[in-house]
Amino acid sequence: MKVGYARVSTQDQNPELQIDALQEAGCEKIFQEKASGAQRDRPQLKAALDYLRPGDVLVVWKLDRLARSLKQLIETVESLEAKGIGFKSITESIDTTTPGGKLIFHIFGSLAEFERSMIRERTRAGLEAARARGRKGGRPRGLSDEDLTAAKALLRDPEITFEAVAKRVGVSAGTLYRYLPGGRGGLRRKLN
Image 1: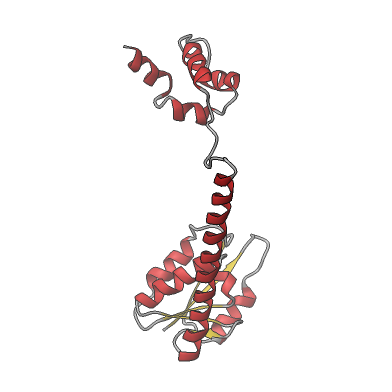
Image 2: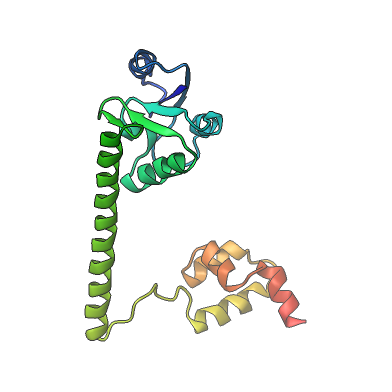
């Protein structure tokens, strides 16, 4: 069975072009939604993936309708393949149920792996060069020991809000909570 998935990015866009192409491709059931491709949580895509059974084929109008990045696309199609489900993109003429389609898709996968390796290599070289110049990696500490001591002292006054203390020591409330888990209550428990 061919199952279609159509997605448009905004409420203003119309999925009719995709739906017509999916119906012409022989899709018996079509799932459609209006959601950004960057969104990982897409209920209709999840419903389509849950609906598919071994031997079925997921059909999309274009690759970017299924995933925003090559990595996400490859992960999704590999997951389908592991379940015995094929994948077809109408516009790019990719069909993993055919030997040629599998070859094209594996070339995409190889390119993505090559790209990830190159990024790792450049990152490693950059870190080594920085260390050679005496720089240390990592995020700078958000709160100095002096500021943390001042924040604890300020928090002993119940009239001063947690947010006001964070602002006074120059960090966000979230950063201050990371240094003082449990907030003011956690501070009191430590003092007792």
